[in-house]
Amino acid sequence: MALFQISEPGQTPAPHERRYAVGIDLGTTNSLVACVRSGVAETLPDEHGRHLLPSVVRYRTDGAPVVGHDAIAVAHEDPLNTIASVKRLMGRGVEDVRRLGQSLPYEFSPGDSAMPRIRTVAGDQSPVAVSAEILKTLKTRATQSLGMEIGDAVITVPAYFDDAQRQATKDAARLAGLNVLRLLSEPTAAAVAYGLDKNPRGVYAIYDLGGGTFDISLLRLNRGVFEVMATAGDSALGGDDMDHAIAEWIMREAGIQDDAGHRQMRRLLRDARAAKEVLTGAEKTTLRVQRDNHEVWEGVLTRTHLNALIDPLIDRTLPPCKRVLRDAGIRANEVDGVVLVGGATRIPRVREKVSQFFGREPLADIDPDKVVAIGAALQADVLIGNKRDEEMLLLDVIPLSLGLEIMGGMVEKIIPRNTTIPVAKAQDFTTFKDGQTALLVHVLQGERELVTDCRSLARFELRGIPPMTAGAARIRVGFQIDADGLLSVSARELTTGVESSVVVKPSYGLTDNEIEHMLRDSIAHAREDEEARKLREQQVDADRLIEAVESALAADGSLLDVKERTEIDRSIEGLKAARGGNDAARIKQAIKTLDGATLAFAARRMDANIRRALTGHKLEEFGAPGGKPTS
Ligand code: ADP
Ligand code: MG
Image 1: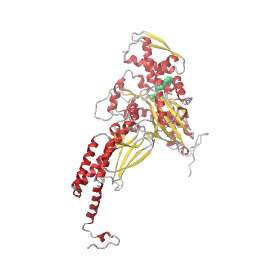
Image 2: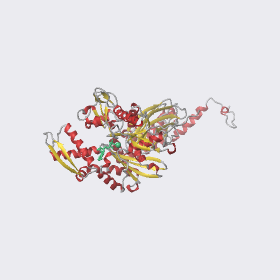
Image 3: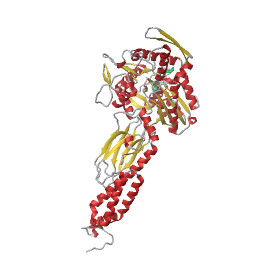
Image 4: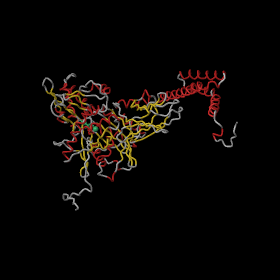
């Protein structure tokens, strides 16, 4: 018997059962969840109609942690158990956190774990666990709004997030009971929200000024493929810094001392933030601040004055904008569109400066603090299969080059930075020594030429290579980065098929400043590195030759007369001396000399080897054509 599909009048029955998947913007300051319903992507509010969930988690002795507005409301009473900005700690190691140390209000537990743990009344918490609480809250919100259990999600991450940070984000999602359909970069999500992916081609700049971070990304759209061309930013610049500038102004005006207590400072910052937000829509606002002696100070802040206070901060966003253009090799007027993202881009002065820099009006129709979540929801809807006809191919890039250590402490780049992912690349290597049966594969990240200047991501060994002469083995090393930006590396000896691999999960990630630093270093040291590389190459060649000649002398030294032997010995000594110095040209010359000195020796060895191989055999055994018996 056939079943009829029943639907409400006016609603078309779905051709296949409709499934929901959500998009989540897991932000440093605020997080949001969005979903496509009836073809429209929208952020989902909580029961009080609020869309933004402050990314703040407060742990308590009894009961579940409190997340969001309620956590913020009591933050000043319980600062040590109220955790904000946990995104900065994702995928970071204990060492990284120690460096961030002073700027963080809460305490860390000493421990031997590679992951930092925040001490709270409800036990030690990892950043992954704290993020999971935020995600759980959003998952519950979505389940209530949509009236069904929601498990699938696209979660956004900054474009520069490295492997460890992406992995940590995925772990948090799993902990929250979410299945991650895809990690999507925030700028790409913003571009998708504006439907820029529908254009045939173009270059777009995504300017994202949030609470505590600034990111600028250049995206290139080409034949339906989105690619992040370059990213830059400042991980310590955002709306919070403006709040500080305003709070300092209030302190000066109201005569509040610099050593204002913690509570007073929190109140001041809250007032400053409110004033800043009011001035986005108004020309002036009145501030009333209670001093410790219970007197009330009252003052007026105008938009013009606000602009003067925040101009230096906005100006700091411009050098990174220049840098991405330079990295991508384009001029500002070649950008086809600018998208504003992040709550702080609502500020009129920010818009003004951005328009000025790029020479065009930025796109800002979609609420800049919701745009990332909306793009993520659109992508989730495609990935869950609700829009089969409209497959979107979204690509990201890797922020730093990936490579391998080769002889001489050098790095051979396998995947250059800004390569779009997913990507797979392989390169063949060989053994350096006769009879070598194992190879150490050392995976590195960075732009510099020498291993010591790059960051070590992983090491593993390929064993069981059959003993062969140096240079005979063929070892193919493959790098694979999946769509979420996670790296795996494999090595395979091609004649035997022995194989070894590793999924790269570094115990901690790089800070954005470190990434910046490494990039700047690589530019500053380019010439120096080239010199160093030339020298290392000659040194490696020298070692290889000395090793080969010495082992030949040990085996077949008897083939030489005294004069020949003396000349070779002298050339070896000469090369060894040159090898010890740092003159690449001199080493090269000494290699040539030794090469020449051993020419006759090499020919004689070959003859001797052939003769040895033939000893004890009759020539006809070898089936030489027309061979005559020798006896
Ligand atoms: P994040 O991406 O870091 O989570 P958001 O994009 O939510 O942060 O931006 C938060 C910042 O935006 C805060 O500094 C907040 O004060 C600021 N902001 C939000 N709304 C406004 C507004 N109307 N005017 C000025 N600043 C605003
Ligand atoms: Mg954001």
